[in-house]
Each structure stands twice: as C-alpha cells, then as structure tokens.
Image (tube, rainbow, N blue to C red; front, side, top):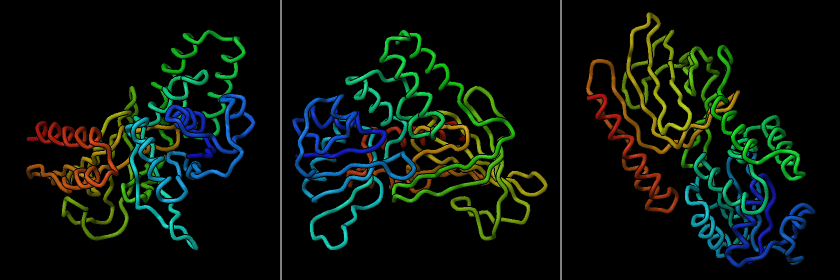
Length: 319
C-alpha cells in the first residue's frame, strides 16, 4: 500500500506506515530528507488534516482505507473514528473516514515522531493549537537539530510551559464540544471568571427556552451556566443557575482528556453523562453510547472503560 500524507501529523504517520511495511507516495522535500525512501507512483490512500487540525481525513478505495485504519488503531491506540464513512461522488468504491486525535492520541503520535527527529513534549498538541504555538515548537526543534540547545533542558522547559497554558482570567473563549457523530458544537462565548493551576471556570448566558437536556429542568430568561474545566480531566462540570443565583442543576459531561488552549478548550464527548437536578439524586444518561461506539470500532475499548470508571466515581462522590 502506498500512502501520501500531508499536514501536521505527517512525520509520525509516515513513520508508522514504514514500520508496517508500506510505502510513502509522492513525498514533500522535507519528507524525502527525513525518510530517504519513497515511491513516485500514485497513492492508494491520501491522508490530510481536517480544517481544525485535531483530526485527519483518510481517502481511498475502501479496502485500502480499512487497512490504513487498522494500522492507525494499532500504532495510535487512542484514535477515535468520528462520523460515518462517506462514499465519494462519482465513485463506487472510494470512501473518506475521519479519525480524531484527542490528547491521548496526540501524545502517542509524539512518540512515533520522536523516532524520526527531535520532538518536544506535546508537539502535536501545540501544532494543532494555532500558528503561535506551532511556531514556538518549530523554532525550538530547529535549534535542537542544529545542536544549539540541550534536549533535556528544552524538553523540561516545554513540559513546564504546557502545564501553565490556560486561558487568561477575564478573556472570552469557546468550548469545542466534538461529538462521536463527527459534529463540532461551539459553546460560548464564555468568559473566564476564575483560574488556578490548570483549572478554569467560565460563565455563559443561556439563551432560548425549553428545558435543559438530561436535567429536564425549564430554562428561564436570565439563566446562566458556570462550567468548570480542568486540564486532562475526563469530564466537565456545568452548573446551571437562575437569574437570582439559585442552582437549578449539575451536568457532568464525560469526555476525552480536556485540551486547554489560550482561546478555546476542546474535547471529544463520549456520550455518557451524569446529571443531578437541584435537590434530587444523581442519575446516569446515555450510558450505552460509549459501549455502542466501542462495539462498532469507533471508540477504543480502553477509553470506553475509562469513561465508565469516571461515571462510577462521580456518582460515588455525589451520593
């Protein structure tokens, strides 16, 4: 199988391709320099970044795409397949699949990339986070390649820097709620009202009528939500309040490890949630969703099990 890869994950993915006995097709100049072997024949599979850089598009004949996905799941075991395979127009057997890389997968890709070249900790997290972070990473790794910096010191510096990266107090951010069906829901604008050691609390105004999903509590004019977000934690906690500050209910959204940037926070929603209307006992909703996603091959088993363990722990704390 011949694979052409473009984008921020290309070095890691091409390393994975070669380790599994397949070929690099039509490489860039830098890919030629890095790997030294390639094919000039047309690719069987084309891989590229999605627009938001947190996932990849895998395009090709069905059998080749499925073979690539098997390799991807084995080499990057925290990969999550989102949405359904899309058959391309004017083609009977070519499909496109989207593979999302939550934080755990990005760190696994870092390990693959480090087998080829200098790779600072949280490399792919930074590259996906925007131009500024991406430039910092490229600059540091260029200095390492030229021998101008000591790797151990740079790696320690990056770990320290990443541990402190959170949205600024008073800033307005968005929460990117990425779902297993492939849709990204943008929640916000949300104002950062509290920040401490990798934890932020943001406030959002609630618009529209109806009831709160899961809580079955009516929405009212003037309602607002306070969401607590902690880096790398596998849930978010939202408390809903009325205009006079009375608590209406709590919503624990189970997700992949929270990724926190300066202007937005993101995660993949794993379906299952814990809810507690004010004055009532907690309950679990949609707990079959991660199991079903695991059964169909979308969600890795270890992430599914972690999600259900988190649910049990939250319920234990609330009862």
